[in-house]
Image (tube, rainbow, N blue to C red; front, side, top):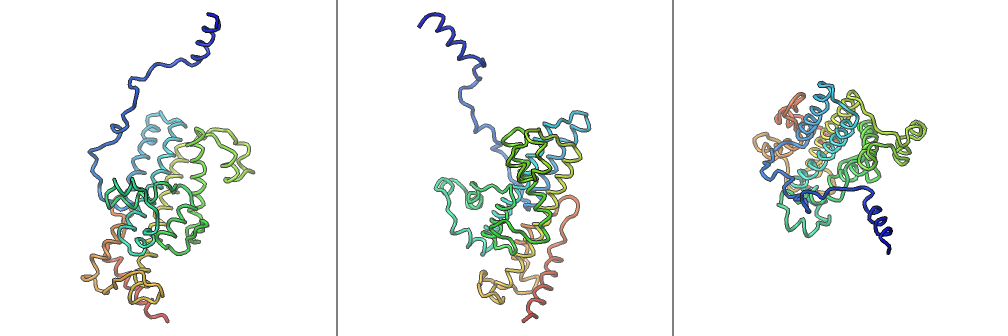
Length: 306
């Protein structure tokens, strides 16, 4: 090869010159906070705390006049991640506590690595490592197959009372795909799912969320999480009686019967209450004993029916 050819080849190899990184291998083990101590919160309060921190990012930037659409896109991804984190945390906590959920989870495959390295209280989380909970169908499927939540289905059907909230969630998640895979630009698949008639002119256009739109998204996610949380709490508590030793369901999913006395039931009831109750910030849950009285009312009415 001539000197000219050698030189040309060298130039071709360096069309985009780059400096060598300071380290040949990145130390990913140093990227995490090894000293972090997990605060015991209900999944809904954990979600609300995460969402509050995310809201601070763009609201403070807006107050300083430094808000940009790129920041909005990154914040948007964080909001959806917080919602997905809620569903994972809820499923994990229920598998650890509820007999029916434990039974359903027992048939799931767990990797050897997870079984070898996870602590017992984190093993249920490993069951969901390969599952995305950033779409309506997967959320409905997991709530149905793992927790037997009524009116949920593997096809993505949800209770009528939650349909509008999940419709908004699905739209939020579809736009999220653009942020993850296309740096915010709208692709044809997402446009089809969102409605091509309205979104065709926006193909390959970048996401440009305003502060007001981010606030609306945050409100839509919180409304969904709070509604799902309430629905699942009521559904599961009712099942602990109807599918318990004294219930009328043919399938007996629970070995322990409620004693219908606060002193005797307090420990068991509080374990469920602690998973679902919101005790932080505005709009806290009613006290555990108040919810227990409501549960007793359900039991009385249920037992009175044929």
